[in-house]
Length: 177
Length: 196
Image 1 (tube, rainbow over the protein chains, first blue to last red):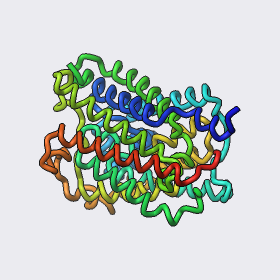
Image 2 (image 1 turned 45 degrees about the vertical axis):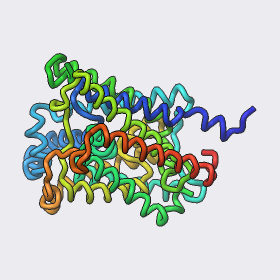
Image 3 (image 1 turned 120 degrees about the vertical axis):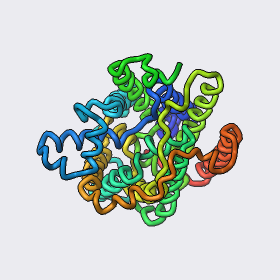
Image 4 (image 1 turned 135 degrees about the horizontal axis):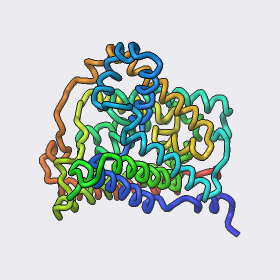
């Protein structure tokens, strides 16, 4: 019998195989739709949609969302990224279900409380969301997809994301190790 | 031939349907590689689990090489493929803010949806944060507009900027990635990983 640690680790794909598969998914997106993958843009679509429904004038007062609404005529939810992200949730769920990983829980290092983990998750989400709009895309849309098409901006954003996280890792070590 | 949708070989609705299937594959690969776990994702920054680095760079290289070869064979017109524009200042500042969000939150947007899909409450809270952050940016856009639009360089390719052909740059990127993979394998042995 293998140890728990090994059986758990073995349930995941080999990372290099996972990378090739992810690369092929990204390649398909480029070949089929002429664009890369993304994530944060779908959240932005939902926000644009909600604000438009709630108060037409509010959207008009926000040039950032207004510009977005103008470039996506019709329903702001009917965008490529929204359909793609719905797929991500389905795909992630199916993979987790088949591997026996479906479980409602707060995952955190044994050294910290769930409450602390959730506070940092919220703060991290806020920063990531904000940064993804400023940087015109997140790890998927800007860094990964940008690198595949050799975009200078994609490489710069990738280095800024990973470089900053490495530099700050020391200060947040208690949360992870 | 490719890309299919911009060449109007497939309709807009078919494109959206395929986006859903591409998303399923995307979510599947992320989750089965372990990207639904914040502790696995953050591991790369402490050396105990470098799955992010391995998957991310292998994927970038695979897609880059695929596009270069498909273009060489005349299967895809890269002029019709979206190239991310480069606004240098916001690419850096936005990346720095995202990096801080990554080490604090343990997810990026795509991986947080995978985590939430299998029941990670921390991922759901992270997604809540994304909504606040994106709304916050849109709400305060006036303050950042100058920064957002500064140093626009068009859509330069990194290979052009370095004065290399796409092929030579691709080869160099592969060599850099192999060197990083070697460091990653070494680090994973050096820094123990607990069972999680």
